[in-house]
Image 1 (tube, rainbow, N blue to C red):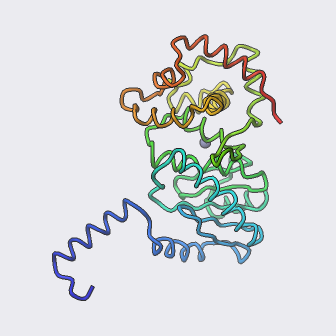
Image 2 (image 1 turned 30 degrees about the vertical axis):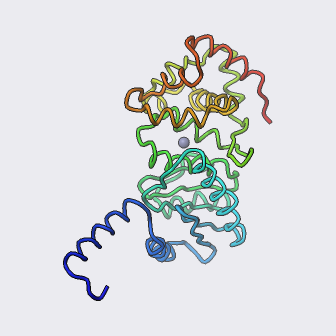
Image 3 (image 1 turned 90 degrees about the vertical axis):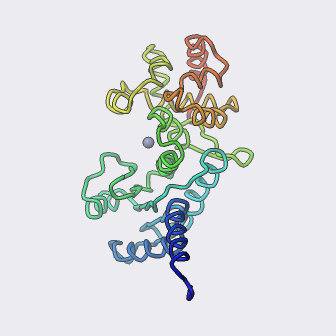
Length: 284
Ligand SMILES: [Zn+2]
């Protein structure tokens, strides 16, 4: 840019501002990795750029590479194909600790707190997914959904954010698309169904964040997950997501959109059919 005059400088500045909003550059990732290299606790850690994430782990380098491609890239590619247009606008780190000892120790030394879950969590403050990868890749895929949801549907209510994220805790591929399968959340849901303790879908979709997370009687995640699973099995899940995003101003809870996509007027009758179907499901 030898001949850059004032006009050019302004255009360049606008281009940089635009680029910051649009996409992270290779140079952004290089800088980020250089900073991470100083931060990793020991030589045992491998750093792999898997855009829009950076994966850092203390399993063998080959295994960290396999996680980055086989789990992170696999899930990201398929989630973007069906749901998410935009990447998160910041680089997020995915820390994969090889076992519980490493997970607990490093969560404390790197992020300053004891994990409240044995599997893993997302730290907004540290822009990091922190995982005990010995418990499997399910929680990792769950946590990957959240930053994409935030980037694409920031007003998404907790019920759908957690329903979709939990759906992919147990995932596979069908015709090139990611699909959720039954998982450990089924048993508790079946018990709640048998006891008649599952709220109406109107109540579930109306929950605030506080109600969904803090006042859960135990079935919120599973009810939301198996509603998503029902939609998926009817071929309606992707359609529902896009309709929900499109109608978010008029129907922020998604309930009217849900009725419309299901083609249901009587949601109590739907709930009875859905509950009977839930009782037929099996895991494993
Ligand atoms: Zn979640």
